[in-house]
Image (cartoon, rainbow, N blue to C red; front, top):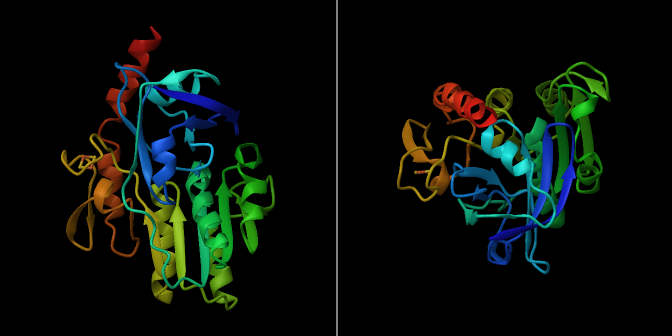
Length: 273
Ligand code: FES
């Protein structure tokens, strides 16, 4: 069993949990993920590692309440335990040769963009962080992001905080202003990652995206997480979750991710009744 040692509500839909998992914390690296199961009746859900503390033996996850299992997890309190917390899974992000990077986060994807910016910052890389939210009420990790970035740019769709517009607007403006990024790392909703990749492609800037397909076993056995990258079938759980954004078939990924939406709604309803 894995004990929850800290809990914070980052906004009305997003929760941070710090979980005692010393063996996962010992090996975790930015870009990797875990699979949790709250109890024996729950589904297995992958979540990218938001942070880890090797000394304390803890791993931090940040997640949005979007379905039955994430709501169940969000209802847990400090001191409670969950049944499974498996990881670290997937390959760590490859930072070799990076000197100036734009880390782009969208919504709850900022939870995963944060450890990327933090790792790069610790290596002395110049990191511009561009984050986007629908409005001021759902902005998360502002102080944390500022602490690990060279420049921090906050965008809101409705202009209720900082600058009005999308992350792609800011990214394009920064590139056109002469910022020579060797890499852009984009993490967030699939459409956002698609449009960041389309933005960087004409400039030939290497673009890494972190994919979040449906996962079941997380070990490359079930095929549930398959994605098409550069015309080849890849399994996000073992070949990723990081991939070259210029090669990913985002439309196929969006279709596959929506397959179980109706069933999940039915399950949530069943458990409420
Ligand atoms: Fe089963 Fe990746 S989750 S192959």
